[in-house]
Length: 178
Ligand SMILES: [Zn+2]
Ligand SMILES: [Zn+2]
Image (cartoon, rainbow, N blue to C red):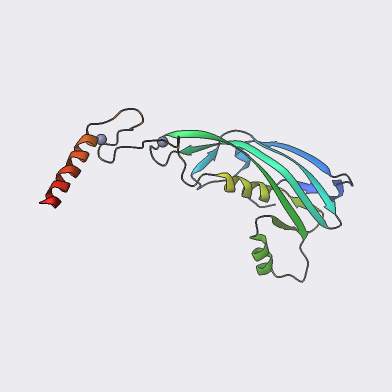
C-alpha cells in the first residue's frame, strides 16, 4: 500500500455473522495532513462495528482526537477536542465500472469501494476528521482579534489605536454633514 496514510486494513473473512468490533488507537504521526491548517496533537481513537451482508460491508464508528489550530482572528494556538460518529458503506468494485465512474461515486462521502479480500477503513476516518475541522477556527467565539494598526492582541490588552480610530470616524461623519 503506497498511500501516505498507510491504511487500516480489515480482512473481510474476519467479519462474522454478528459483526466485527474494532478499536484502534493511532499515533498522530500515522496521519498525513500536511499542508492543512490544523494538526492532530493526541492519539486518534477509532471504535466501531463492521457488518457484512453478502458483498456489502457497513462500518459504524466513532473517531475522536484533539486538534491544534491557529485562531483566525488573534493567531494564538489553541486545541479543540473532536468526536464524531460516522457510517460508511463499502461496495465491491465491479469489473465493468470505469475508474472515472468509481471516482464519481466515491465522491459521495458515505460510499467506498473495495476489491479483493480486505477493506481499508482509513479513508472514511480521514473524511470524518476533515469534516469536523473548523474552516475559520476561533480560540473563543468572542475572540477580539488583533488590532489592525499595532498588532496588539485585544484579548490581552486594549491599545490606544482603537480610540483614535473611533474619533476619526466621528470626524468623517461631521465632514459629511457639512
Ligand atoms: Zn483568537
Ligand atoms: Zn492598536
